[in-house]
Image 1 (cartoon, rainbow, N blue to C red):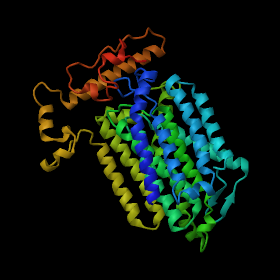
Image 2 (cartoon, helix red, strand yellow):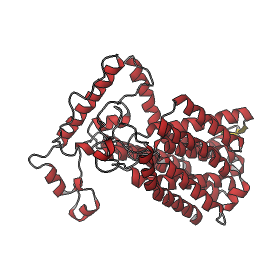
Image 3 (cartoon, rainbow, N blue to C red):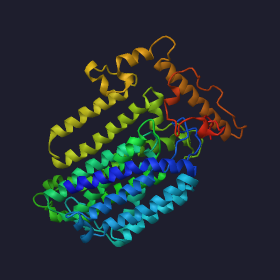
Length: 469
């Protein structure tokens, strides 16, 4: 455990220290696209945060290769090298997309090639556990197709959820933490060395996300971009493939006893397939609703809009930070709930606890304007808006109320959508929204984003941040 924690800390430290220089490089390289109508940030913000995450991953794997116990993972398995090869390819494609915005089909092809590179080096699904039947061996083509499908789905799910500051990195970190606990239990409790690579991948993934989050939390100073979101999606998928397709369930003696006992004992084996759903479940449902919504309006299913889940959380009154925390809560509930169920699937207390926490999550979702009262002794540890003095200043005469701020934001969002609709029907391009946010509304400029590089005049160079393209 000490070596895993050391690998995690080294990965996090390298990622954190490199993100600052990478941000400056992204600004110089011009990797700062203009604000689009569907974006929630209000200032051009540099991308390419995936560069720091990739080198953090490389540093973590390099350190692990020189540790006494983790060195056996590299000697007995080719999976770390397979992961590094696929990650380098997907990272390079992401960097090109962050700078030049390459076509979606090219990115999809690159994702499939990266998955194929990992399959060629041995990181593939060899068998699937089936309750009551046993271990079902897959043919080479079946294993390859299933592996590529899982990698592509996970990569795009993570990329799809990357819509708010700190959202993708935080949710993947939560999923990686639950996955690390599961894989370490398989390796330590059952003594199965084949689970060690997946445990290492989860530790490195947590380090990448934790090192990047301080720079990416709202207001974000840099975005991970596709170079980061596709990278962490691939690492998450690689860990799931390693445990599910490489660890033989027969070694765990899961098929002993009656068929019912075998079914209950097989639950832990399916958890690696379920844990990536902590990332896929929320964006996948949002994706289905988006396709239905756009088709119903007569638009292309791939047309961008502001109807995604994180947009709706902002529209109903949640702040940027609260919307992210709500999605963190649901990701943790799904991930650690599945982990607890794998440990003791027969316990009704676990099911009852999940139900109660789900109810609490729904209550928080329906209370967008609830502001907790912080005790005086704890005011030094919370943001200013939760302190009594900060609330009194915000509600002073002449200060904007939360309702006014929300109304102004919704008015500006509606104007941006109107511009989008006008362009789609061939009308003249609207030069700017007809009802911009009032300059006197306090705090509106920081509602959905942050100033990327300091003074506005040094960044925008005459461009208007409120344009729809």
